[in-house]
Image 1 (cartoon, rainbow, N blue to C red):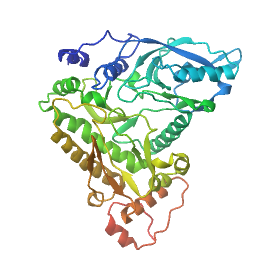
Image 2: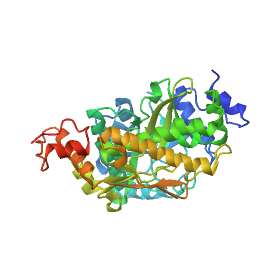
Image 3: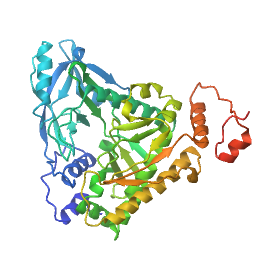
Image 4: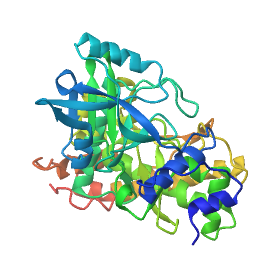
Length: 435
């Protein structure tokens, strides 16, 4: 099987000389796809020297999970003259927010010296994948920048958002610890550092098992890139490119977002292809699993989140993204992107219908609620397909009770209706307490 990069070149695209050889092949390929097979913005895949400030930990608010790999933690936090410091990177494209950070440091009596510790690589947006020159740890960092790729330009990484992402990530990983998710994995964001006085944050994202795996993570927008999407589909023997990605991206994404919503009460606010990656094996065959990233831009459905023990998350979440009595079931694979030549608008409309079929089936599997009780009409808004699912029904009430009873230390609730009525509503609620 020829390499993906060779297939990429075969379709007439030029590429810059590859990133540094210290990168693992899987990480190198992610960078190439992030920057070169992006239908909206062609970016550089060249290694850059990344400037950073060395900021005393005492003037920041660190937020570290015990999930952070030791080599990543030690890349960011070091000790000098008996005091702990944080390497806070400067986005190379930024010309605005670094000046606010410099003033903050001066106000704190810290001289804002710019150091050059990491090397780094652009992604499709503001994050940079960085490499530690000593340990060769490879991970992603996100800070504010007023220049970035795609259609979203000035993007401030606020301290508040960094805290939101950390809380949401911990909540999802707590759920995964109960039972691994079937359809997806999440790129963990196990650490953040906040300069609360100027509302600035730095988020740390690890690349799951990518640095040590034979698998590849293909950005969703690369799957619908005119040439890259065709190259991978044909490497897998496909002749109908749109049908291939319907089966290997759109439908698995429907199952993924249903499982995420059903088990956690979370739905993406902006479910476009920058937030999703497709797992490929070493031969570039899709495994069926989706990789999720960026849990900051999400909706919370209160019934489900509270039942799962996430009441504190609901209280702290921005009010406009807290939903009561319904779930969002939306997808916008081509939002902010361009149509590839092999996908018609009629086919894209069918993708929306197929997404919802998979969403309903997977939600039924997760909750036990019959598919016919989940269906609702979807509508198209631009390149988004959206719908709302009512969670105020009796079937959903019983599922919420089931979630509550599964929490450790929660006393089983007594049903107020006869058991036979519960069984008529849904035969799959095994484990509910009988009166």
